[in-house]
Length: 95
Length: 148
Image (tube, rainbow over all chains, first blue to last red; front, top):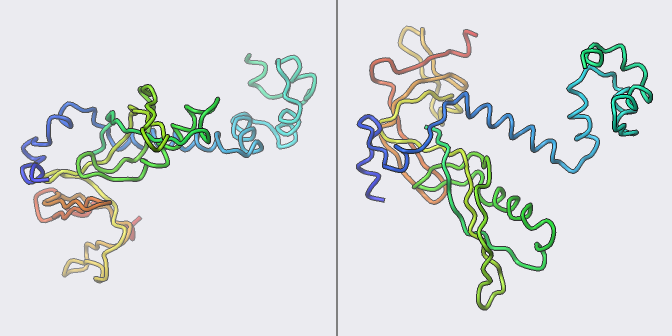
């Protein structure tokens, strides 16, 4: 490891590999790690968690969330037929 | 400094446990388990694997029957350099009491943020240790948690 004795960031002596590499700012790393955390949570084997994760992004009540999770409607029409109360949420009419 | 680099590793899998439909997932899962959180003197700490660039053809090893796959993957590493200036959060001051200036105006304690210059690094099997200084222009405490 004698090469490390000659390293000095103040003189940009950090080795070819790192000089040419992509540097990440702390904020970028923070975003990457948050994204990874979300991915890991989604991949957990617990189906309740996975479904809740995705459906909780929308403004649904627990009851609506669970009915949708149980029935897994495939189209918007089917979803509205199964859970008519979601019609009142603005995001549905925006679509 | 954090870097986004491509590293390569030979992953050994033992068939038939891992072969089948989930071979790729198994390889990736094992890669993450083996590599994330480790540290090398050359590349620093592997913080997170962000993607798989390539998985080469598996090679059956003589004698053991294990199969070895060369895997190229992208990852975020943290590699400190001597002479680098960075900002860090104090996790503990060891056994020593908290640092305070003689007039009590500035304190360094757990959760304080400080800007320091790394003046030396040492590598051992599992970690990179750094020694730094705050005795230079523009270095020192950024944020005193007590005042927040």
